[in-house]
Length: 435
Image 1 (tube, rainbow, N blue to C red):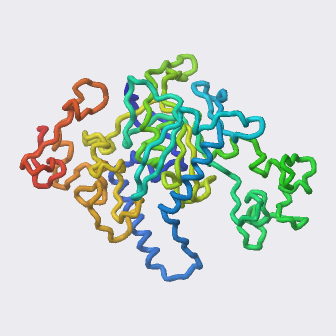
Image 2: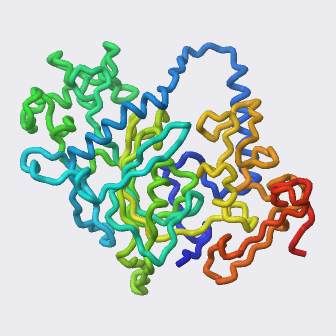
Image 3: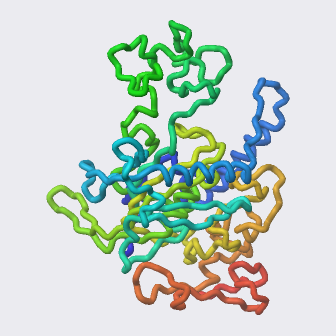
């Protein structure tokens, strides 16, 4: 089942928390313009001799961070269990909640021992990461799994593993600490207000049970439960982003862990429209899973709202459908334009693991055949020979299923000079084929 939509009719939610870059539905001209703006800005910054006092802190080593996080993730999976609760906002699926195996819950089965946990190795920046995913439903067997370059119609819920962050290691969680960063100055609440600590015990007044005697303090540590994440049982407290109604995401534009989990399931076998209220009810065989990802497959050292740097993340995702994507409308599905077979279509000329290209980069061993700084999946003339890519291949959706299958011969790549390089990637072969 193909979801017929274009971005003028389908709702696309611009959730910045998942996006590594702006929407891949932009036109090629906008892409080139944006690159020019970024390069100009970088040039201006590099030529700014003013000392503004900013000190750049180098990011942590990828390998060391992965080695530090793997035991944390495994410990979480072995010490936590999950429950499913009804979702009043969207009854199509239940919300998964996680809690610690302790006290009244000491007999619960861990995620690790649930029999539903799977894992796979994802290599990024030459680091082998283990991605864990809890599969509750694989999706309909009649439906295709999306590729890394396709569009996915999903609901999701993103949360951090732990939220009792203690930057200065004084035993007081940051949100209750009058001086969370340990600089011997009270932290700012706003531009005009700072935290106060009337009794000098290090606990901010708004979190101190001495100042809030009517508030509970379950563990007797002097911090009221609302500010003490160990005692705070609100299941939503660690959630940083969610969508309870389905939204479209370009999988090439989300964090790798989200993408690599989503391509492991398929969508629903169908849906019914309710003519009375315009809602849609999906068959209950949609893909439903939770992925546990290290920070190296998430945001690593990037600053994101609600997510501390170097945070492993949890995403619970429901996949209802997918569309095969051809970003530049050249007839070639975008996943077939991944020349490096690294599940990444974006040009990384400096090889630093991100798609932002520093000035002077000339590493052309990426998915950009003609070196135009426009990756092939956005380039309407991949080899820059003056003949559009769509005129150098032949495409025919013979079975009219909305998908171009190379295995069914629905796309033909030509090689006129027999050098092993298809015409659309070879500037020596430029004769159009579809006159």
